Length: 57
Image 1 (cartoon, rainbow, N blue to C red):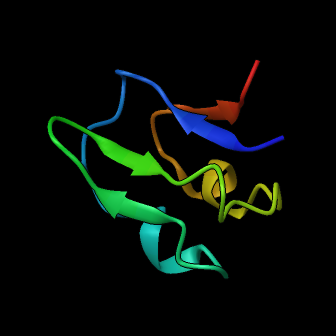
Image 2: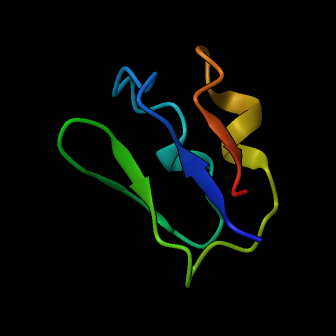
């Protein structure tokens, strides 16, 4: 199950460099995670300072 970024995202960029499969990209108004690339590792969620990243569902 892929991770998703909710509207609490502040676009700080801390999640993008830790993604091992480069599934995170800059969107508007928040970063987005490509569910087809996400491997459910959770590295991005651990880095998010505002806890805006959660498992989908």
